[in-house]
Length: 346
View (cartoon, helix red, strand yellow):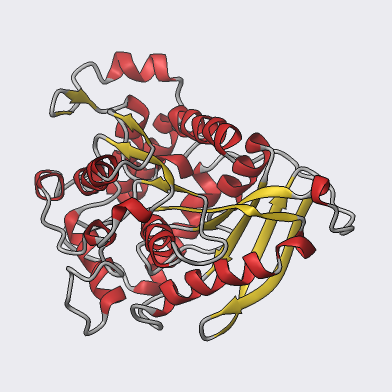
Protein backbone atom coordinates (compact mmCIF):
# COMPACT_ATOMS: atom_id res chain seq x y z
CA UNK A 1 0.00 0.00 0.00
CA UNK A 2 2.85 2.36 0.77
CA UNK A 3 4.34 1.88 -2.69
CA UNK A 4 0.96 2.42 -4.34
CA UNK A 5 0.44 5.60 -2.35
CA UNK A 6 3.88 6.82 -3.33
CA UNK A 7 3.26 6.07 -7.00
CA UNK A 8 -0.05 7.87 -6.84
CA UNK A 9 1.66 10.83 -5.20
CA UNK A 10 4.32 10.95 -7.91
CA UNK A 11 1.61 11.05 -10.56
CA UNK A 12 -0.41 13.70 -8.74
CA UNK A 13 2.52 16.05 -8.17
CA UNK A 14 3.17 16.19 -11.91
CA UNK A 15 -0.39 17.27 -12.76
CA UNK A 16 -0.96 20.88 -13.89
CA UNK A 17 -1.63 23.32 -11.09
CA UNK A 18 -5.07 24.26 -12.45
CA UNK A 19 -6.22 20.63 -12.22
CA UNK A 20 -4.86 20.18 -8.71
CA UNK A 21 -6.78 23.25 -7.57
CA UNK A 22 -9.99 21.54 -8.71
CA UNK A 23 -9.09 18.43 -6.73
CA UNK A 24 -7.96 20.28 -3.60
CA UNK A 25 -10.53 23.04 -3.21
CA UNK A 26 -10.29 23.18 0.59
CA UNK A 27 -6.62 23.48 1.45
CA UNK A 28 -4.88 24.00 4.77
CA UNK A 29 -4.71 27.56 6.08
CA UNK A 30 -2.40 29.13 8.64
CA UNK A 31 -2.52 32.73 9.83
CA UNK A 32 -4.80 33.60 6.95
CA UNK A 33 -2.48 31.99 4.41
CA UNK A 34 -3.53 29.10 2.16
CA UNK A 35 -0.97 26.47 1.30
CA UNK A 36 0.13 26.36 -2.34
CA UNK A 37 -1.51 23.39 -4.03
CA UNK A 38 1.76 22.09 -5.46
CA UNK A 39 3.43 22.32 -2.06
CA UNK A 40 0.46 20.48 -0.53
CA UNK A 41 0.64 17.56 -2.97
CA UNK A 42 4.41 17.28 -2.63
CA UNK A 43 4.11 17.42 1.15
CA UNK A 44 1.60 14.59 1.11
CA UNK A 45 3.92 12.60 -1.12
CA UNK A 46 6.74 13.11 1.38
CA UNK A 47 4.48 11.79 4.12
CA UNK A 48 3.96 8.52 2.22
CA UNK A 49 7.71 7.90 2.37
CA UNK A 50 8.17 8.79 6.02
CA UNK A 51 6.97 6.60 8.87
CA UNK A 52 5.05 8.79 11.38
CA UNK A 53 7.02 9.40 14.54
CA UNK A 54 10.07 7.53 13.26
CA UNK A 55 13.30 9.19 12.24
CA UNK A 56 15.66 7.75 9.63
CA UNK A 57 19.31 7.00 10.17
CA UNK A 58 21.76 9.66 9.03
CA UNK A 59 22.67 7.48 6.06
CA UNK A 60 19.02 7.08 5.08
CA UNK A 61 18.32 10.78 5.50
CA UNK A 62 21.25 11.72 3.25
CA UNK A 63 20.11 9.24 0.60
CA UNK A 64 16.58 10.66 0.74
CA UNK A 65 17.93 14.19 0.38
CA UNK A 66 19.98 13.26 -2.67
CA UNK A 67 17.01 11.47 -4.25
CA UNK A 68 14.69 14.44 -3.71
CA UNK A 69 17.20 16.75 -5.40
CA UNK A 70 17.35 14.50 -8.45
CA UNK A 71 13.60 13.99 -8.69
CA UNK A 72 12.18 17.39 -7.92
CA UNK A 73 14.66 20.13 -8.83
CA UNK A 74 14.50 21.33 -12.42
CA UNK A 75 17.82 21.28 -14.26
CA UNK A 76 19.59 24.61 -14.50
CA UNK A 77 20.82 26.23 -17.71
CA UNK A 78 24.24 25.58 -19.21
CA UNK A 79 27.08 27.83 -18.05
CA UNK A 80 30.38 28.90 -19.56
CA UNK A 81 32.28 27.88 -16.39
CA UNK A 82 31.65 25.13 -13.87
CA UNK A 83 34.87 24.35 -12.03
CA UNK A 84 35.49 21.98 -9.12
CA UNK A 85 38.48 22.68 -6.90
CA UNK A 86 39.64 22.60 -3.30
CA UNK A 87 39.89 25.52 -0.90
CA UNK A 88 41.09 25.84 2.67
CA UNK A 89 38.65 24.79 5.34
CA UNK A 90 39.27 25.12 9.05
CA UNK A 91 40.33 21.48 9.34
CA UNK A 92 41.93 21.00 5.95
CA UNK A 93 40.87 21.21 2.30
CA UNK A 94 37.17 21.21 1.43
CA UNK A 95 35.57 20.91 -1.97
CA UNK A 96 34.12 23.91 -3.76
CA UNK A 97 32.42 24.51 -7.10
CA UNK A 98 32.48 27.74 -9.09
CA UNK A 99 29.62 28.67 -11.41
CA UNK A 100 29.73 31.50 -13.95
CA UNK A 101 28.32 32.21 -17.36
CA UNK A 102 31.34 34.31 -18.29
CA UNK A 103 34.65 32.85 -19.41
CA UNK A 104 37.75 34.12 -17.60
CA UNK A 105 41.24 34.42 -19.07
CA UNK A 106 42.96 34.99 -15.70
CA UNK A 107 44.61 38.25 -16.72
CA UNK A 108 43.72 39.88 -13.42
CA UNK A 109 42.36 42.91 -15.25
CA UNK A 110 39.88 44.72 -13.04
CA UNK A 111 37.32 45.10 -15.82
CA UNK A 112 37.13 41.31 -16.24
CA UNK A 113 36.45 40.58 -12.56
CA UNK A 114 32.93 39.63 -11.48
CA UNK A 115 30.95 39.97 -8.24
CA UNK A 116 30.41 36.72 -6.39
CA UNK A 117 28.14 34.96 -3.94
CA UNK A 118 29.73 32.41 -1.59
CA UNK A 119 26.95 29.87 -1.09
CA UNK A 120 26.46 27.44 1.81
CA UNK A 121 23.94 24.67 1.13
CA UNK A 122 21.12 23.66 3.43
CA UNK A 123 20.42 20.23 4.86
CA UNK A 124 20.03 20.56 8.60
CA UNK A 125 23.81 20.66 9.13
CA UNK A 126 23.68 16.90 8.50
CA UNK A 127 23.10 16.41 4.77
CA UNK A 128 23.43 18.23 1.47
CA UNK A 129 26.46 18.65 -0.75
CA UNK A 130 27.59 20.22 -4.01
CA UNK A 131 25.27 17.95 -6.00
CA UNK A 132 22.12 18.54 -3.94
CA UNK A 133 22.32 22.28 -4.61
CA UNK A 134 23.93 22.19 -8.04
CA UNK A 135 20.79 23.35 -9.83
CA UNK A 136 20.12 26.16 -7.36
CA UNK A 137 23.66 27.49 -7.74
CA UNK A 138 23.56 27.11 -11.52
CA UNK A 139 20.43 29.25 -11.72
CA UNK A 140 21.74 31.86 -9.30
CA UNK A 141 24.88 32.27 -11.40
CA UNK A 142 23.13 32.31 -14.79
CA UNK A 143 20.35 34.70 -13.87
CA UNK A 144 22.42 37.06 -11.70
CA UNK A 145 25.26 37.46 -14.19
CA UNK A 146 27.81 36.95 -11.42
CA UNK A 147 29.81 34.12 -9.92
CA UNK A 148 28.54 31.63 -7.35
CA UNK A 149 30.97 29.52 -5.33
CA UNK A 150 29.39 26.63 -3.44
CA UNK A 151 31.28 25.31 -0.41
CA UNK A 152 31.12 21.66 0.69
CA UNK A 153 31.65 22.18 4.42
CA UNK A 154 31.98 19.34 6.93
CA UNK A 155 28.73 17.78 8.16
CA UNK A 156 27.42 16.57 11.49
CA UNK A 157 27.30 14.21 13.27
CA UNK A 158 30.80 13.28 12.13
CA UNK A 159 31.76 16.91 12.72
CA UNK A 160 29.84 18.72 15.45
CA UNK A 161 29.42 22.47 15.94
CA UNK A 162 31.34 24.59 15.13
CA UNK A 163 33.40 22.66 12.58
CA UNK A 164 31.15 23.17 9.57
CA UNK A 165 30.72 26.83 10.48
CA UNK A 166 34.48 27.25 10.82
CA UNK A 167 34.86 25.79 7.32
CA UNK A 168 32.38 28.35 6.02
CA UNK A 169 34.22 31.23 7.62
CA UNK A 170 37.62 30.00 6.43
CA UNK A 171 36.23 29.49 2.92
CA UNK A 172 35.14 33.10 2.65
CA UNK A 173 38.54 34.33 3.81
CA UNK A 174 40.35 32.02 1.37
CA UNK A 175 38.15 33.11 -1.52
CA UNK A 176 38.70 36.78 -0.72
CA UNK A 177 42.46 36.21 -0.69
CA UNK A 178 42.42 34.23 -3.94
CA UNK A 179 39.68 36.17 -5.67
CA UNK A 180 41.60 37.48 -8.68
CA UNK A 181 42.84 34.03 -9.72
CA UNK A 182 39.19 32.95 -9.89
CA UNK A 183 37.94 36.05 -11.69
CA UNK A 184 36.22 37.44 -8.60
CA UNK A 185 36.06 41.07 -7.57
CA UNK A 186 36.89 40.78 -3.87
CA UNK A 187 35.21 44.12 -3.16
CA UNK A 188 31.87 42.69 -4.37
CA UNK A 189 31.89 39.41 -2.51
CA UNK A 190 28.95 38.33 -0.35
CA UNK A 191 27.51 35.29 1.40
CA UNK A 192 24.30 33.34 1.15
CA UNK A 193 22.64 30.05 1.85
CA UNK A 194 19.43 28.20 2.58
CA UNK A 195 18.25 26.78 5.89
CA UNK A 196 21.36 25.58 7.79
CA UNK A 197 23.50 27.26 5.13
CA UNK A 198 21.64 30.50 5.77
CA UNK A 199 22.63 30.18 9.42
CA UNK A 200 26.27 29.86 8.39
CA UNK A 201 26.00 32.84 6.04
CA UNK A 202 24.54 35.06 8.77
CA UNK A 203 27.25 34.08 11.26
CA UNK A 204 30.04 34.57 8.72
CA UNK A 205 28.67 38.00 7.80
CA UNK A 206 28.72 38.99 11.47
CA UNK A 207 32.07 37.50 12.43
CA UNK A 208 33.85 38.96 9.40
CA UNK A 209 32.28 42.40 9.63
CA UNK A 210 35.73 43.84 10.43
CA UNK A 211 37.57 41.68 7.94
CA UNK A 212 39.00 43.26 4.81
CA UNK A 213 37.02 42.74 2.75
CA UNK A 214 33.90 42.07 4.79
CA UNK A 215 30.94 40.36 3.12
CA UNK A 216 29.16 43.07 1.11
CA UNK A 217 25.72 41.45 1.26
CA UNK A 218 23.92 38.37 2.50
CA UNK A 219 21.18 36.30 0.88
CA UNK A 220 19.30 34.26 3.47
CA UNK A 221 16.78 31.67 2.28
CA UNK A 222 14.54 30.52 5.16
CA UNK A 223 17.56 30.41 7.50
CA UNK A 224 17.96 28.75 10.86
CA UNK A 225 18.54 31.63 13.30
CA UNK A 226 17.46 30.35 16.73
CA UNK A 227 18.66 27.09 18.23
CA UNK A 228 16.02 27.14 20.96
CA UNK A 229 13.39 25.92 18.47
CA UNK A 230 10.61 27.48 20.49
CA UNK A 231 9.10 30.15 18.25
CA UNK A 232 5.35 30.26 17.69
CA UNK A 233 5.68 28.96 14.13
CA UNK A 234 7.94 26.07 15.17
CA UNK A 235 5.34 24.97 17.71
CA UNK A 236 2.22 25.74 15.67
CA UNK A 237 3.64 24.03 12.58
CA UNK A 238 5.19 21.13 14.46
CA UNK A 239 3.62 18.70 11.98
CA UNK A 240 4.46 20.78 8.91
CA UNK A 241 5.05 19.22 5.54
CA UNK A 242 8.72 18.66 4.65
CA UNK A 243 10.13 19.90 7.99
CA UNK A 244 8.49 18.84 11.26
CA UNK A 245 9.59 20.01 14.68
CA UNK A 246 10.74 16.47 15.45
CA UNK A 247 13.04 16.51 12.43
CA UNK A 248 14.35 20.02 13.12
CA UNK A 249 15.20 18.98 16.67
CA UNK A 250 16.93 15.84 15.39
CA UNK A 251 19.06 17.90 13.01
CA UNK A 252 19.95 20.41 15.71
CA UNK A 253 20.92 17.75 18.22
CA UNK A 254 23.10 15.90 15.73
CA UNK A 255 24.81 19.19 14.94
CA UNK A 256 25.33 20.49 18.45
CA UNK A 257 26.86 17.40 20.03
CA UNK A 258 27.35 18.36 23.68
CA UNK A 259 26.95 22.08 23.02
CA UNK A 260 23.90 23.59 24.73
CA UNK A 261 24.25 27.40 24.79
CA UNK A 262 21.55 28.30 22.30
CA UNK A 263 22.02 32.01 23.08
CA UNK A 264 25.48 31.86 21.51
CA UNK A 265 25.28 33.96 18.32
CA UNK A 266 27.58 31.51 16.53
CA UNK A 267 24.89 28.87 17.00
CA UNK A 268 21.88 31.21 16.86
CA UNK A 269 22.53 34.32 14.73
CA UNK A 270 19.27 35.83 15.98
CA UNK A 271 21.33 36.77 19.05
CA UNK A 272 24.07 38.56 17.10
CA UNK A 273 25.47 41.32 19.32
CA UNK A 274 25.73 44.10 16.74
CA UNK A 275 23.20 43.97 13.92
CA UNK A 276 24.31 47.39 12.69
CA UNK A 277 27.57 45.81 11.50
CA UNK A 278 25.77 43.50 9.08
CA UNK A 279 25.58 44.12 5.32
CA UNK A 280 22.50 44.71 3.19
CA UNK A 281 20.32 41.63 3.25
CA UNK A 282 17.83 39.70 1.16
CA UNK A 283 15.58 37.47 3.25
CA UNK A 284 13.24 34.82 1.86
CA UNK A 285 10.60 33.20 4.06
CA UNK A 286 7.73 30.74 3.54
CA UNK A 287 4.36 30.85 5.29
CA UNK A 288 4.17 27.11 6.05
CA UNK A 289 7.78 26.82 7.18
CA UNK A 290 8.30 26.36 10.94
CA UNK A 291 11.42 28.57 10.67
CA UNK A 292 9.37 31.53 9.44
CA UNK A 293 9.09 33.38 12.76
CA UNK A 294 12.77 33.26 13.68
CA UNK A 295 13.73 34.53 10.21
CA UNK A 296 11.19 37.34 10.53
CA UNK A 297 12.56 38.21 13.97
CA UNK A 298 16.03 38.45 12.42
CA UNK A 299 14.64 40.85 9.81
CA UNK A 300 13.13 42.99 12.56
CA UNK A 301 16.50 43.27 14.28
CA UNK A 302 18.20 44.23 11.01
CA UNK A 303 15.58 46.89 10.35
CA UNK A 304 15.84 48.30 13.87
CA UNK A 305 19.62 48.54 13.40
CA UNK A 306 19.20 50.50 10.17
CA UNK A 307 20.46 47.76 7.84
CA UNK A 308 18.90 47.82 4.35
CA UNK A 309 16.82 44.65 4.05
CA UNK A 310 14.50 43.20 1.44
CA UNK A 311 12.12 40.65 2.91
CA UNK A 312 10.23 38.49 0.41
CA UNK A 313 7.56 36.26 1.91
CA UNK A 314 5.82 33.45 0.00
CA UNK A 315 2.69 32.88 2.10
CA UNK A 316 1.67 29.51 0.66
CA UNK A 317 5.06 27.84 0.57
CA UNK A 318 6.89 25.20 2.56
CA UNK A 319 10.50 24.82 3.61
CA UNK A 320 12.95 23.91 0.83
CA UNK A 321 10.69 25.03 -2.01
CA UNK A 322 13.52 26.65 -4.01
CA UNK A 323 15.01 23.15 -4.36
CA UNK A 324 11.74 21.72 -5.67
CA UNK A 325 11.31 23.73 -8.85
CA UNK A 326 10.37 20.78 -11.08
CA UNK A 327 7.06 20.60 -9.21
CA UNK A 328 6.70 23.95 -7.40
CA UNK A 329 6.80 26.84 -9.90
CA UNK A 330 7.13 29.43 -7.15
CA UNK A 331 10.58 28.02 -6.40
CA UNK A 332 11.75 29.30 -9.77
CA UNK A 333 10.01 32.61 -9.18
CA UNK A 334 11.82 32.98 -5.86
CA UNK A 335 15.23 32.36 -7.44
CA UNK A 336 14.48 34.82 -10.23
CA UNK A 337 13.63 37.49 -7.67
CA UNK A 338 16.79 36.80 -5.69
CA UNK A 339 18.92 37.16 -8.81
CA UNK A 340 17.17 40.40 -9.73
CA UNK A 341 18.11 41.74 -6.29
CA UNK A 342 21.68 40.55 -6.78
CA UNK A 343 21.98 42.34 -10.12
CA UNK A 344 20.81 45.52 -8.44
CA UNK A 345 23.03 45.15 -5.38
CA UNK A 346 26.32 43.57 -6.51
